[in-house]
Length: 118
Image 1 (cartoon, one colour):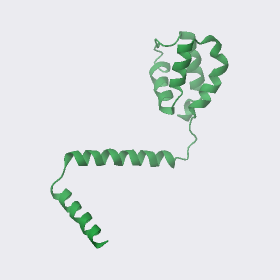
Image 2 (cartoon, helix red, strand yellow; image 1 turned 90 degrees about the vertical axis):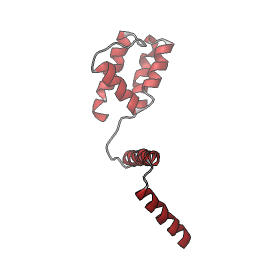
Image 3 (cartoon, one colour; image 1 turned 135 degrees about the horizontal axis):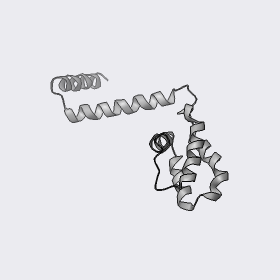
Image 4 (cartoon, one colour; image 1 turned 30 degrees about the vertical axis):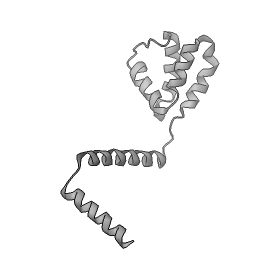
């Protein structure tokens, strides 16, 4: 146990006086990832479940072709992808080549109903 403590102190002193840029960048990435995961795990706000949007759109899938349905599935896979799609195509009213314009408007309408939960 004593040897382990001495080793940790020796490594800390070495890294303090001889910084390693690759190691420091890796450490910062890991620290950022751990903090974001901890923040997501302890968040008490009500958040959007992307599966809810997919379930709301399922009754309208008769007017979607197979490629559009697959694209909707990828859009609603994560909260971040829903938010990215909404910001890119719904707020800016830009057409997406993967969806028919009526279907895009329908998706944007469904997402905008849950916009406050982003």
